[in-house]
Amino acid sequence: MTRPARVLIILALLLCTVGVAVAAERFPPPDFTDHVLPTTQVVPPRSDLWEYVDATALLAGLSLATYFALVNRSRRGLYLLTIASLLWFGFWREGCICSIGAIQNITLALFNPSYSVPFVAVAFFMLPLMFALFFGRTFCAAVCPLGAVQELVAIRPVKVPAWLEHTLGLVPYIYLGTAVALAADGTAFVICRYDPFVAFFRRSGTLDMLVFGGSMLVVGLFVGRPYCRYLCPYGALLGLCSKVSKWHLKITPDECTNCRLCEDACPYGAIRKPTVEWSADDRVTGRRRLAVLLVMLPVLIALGIWLGSLLAVPLARMNPMFRLAQRVQLENTQQVQGTTEASDAFRNTGRPVDELYRQAIQLQRRFAAIGGWLGAWIGLVIGVKLIHLSIRRRRTEHSPNPVNCLSCGRCFWYCPAEQVRLDEKKREKGTK
Image (cartoon, rainbow, N blue to C red; front, top):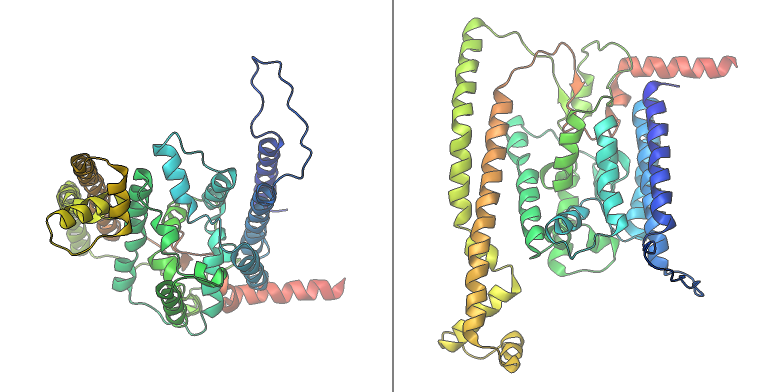
């Protein structure tokens, strides 16, 4: 048994032990009372049971995906697991709860002590990240239902230009910062609101989301996994964890021959080519560019803070209380005709209008601070990206980029060394 397989089994057993311990008694009685808890006479709610079923299914899916990608090197196994995950987490469980949306539950729990985050949300948020720290993005390979539906429709993907790939690759980090900022304030769960595929999973939804999801699938026919690569905020976290993973999917089981067949096999732009030796002038120019970017990093952050603070009003409009205050003000100044149900309900409460206006002003100030933090995050992301692109690392063979590689195993089909391994495996089975 290989070392990654042993670590995978140990990790799975530890997580199962933790899950059983949590499931045993979620709310134990306090030590300072002699009260005896009554025996439950009815069957526990199905939703609680399904929480642990879903968490167990997630753990099993991650374990299988890791085994197929790193140990067995089976593209067929990953493909079949992709279909199973889509059916279970997508259509059967209707895309909820998902690891992507769990970002918001965890964020709200961290910033709002009164909010109790469900166990399943913690499990769905932490388990894929823990696996990514050890084995790369195996969650994206065949477990995530959003990635699964895109993987199945990627029939004729084309290669995206490198400059466009790097530019669009910034969007998930910006989306992540926006989602965290709005969830921390309790304003909105934008990830769930703009999930492109949940309407298909639930066989219902608004027309605009159905059109958005359908458009994403049409684009996915020619651009591999557009949501995963250019929108998914959880993918940004997984990429950072995968970057430091000790074990990761390898294109070839043996030494790379640089045949370049894997370059066309990967539809996700995750193959890193061997580097070309720089001249002395190129190295000097690279060092100067890196120094300029390091100096520019705090400038970008400061510029982001200033621009983000200007978004106070647009961000505050996402809060229903702020929108109500704006509507009441427009009605009182006769800038609009008629009233709305919300404004009528407010007037029926008898609350002073000045109190509503004061709350709106406080919200605007709070969102100015939120916008500043969000702008600082965006400036940091852009600056770090530019610095990363300016750093040159020497590579002598083709290798997957651990940040972008989704561990889908498509490159297995095109690697000559992998085909030799499979042939030898067949011969060994034939001689037994």
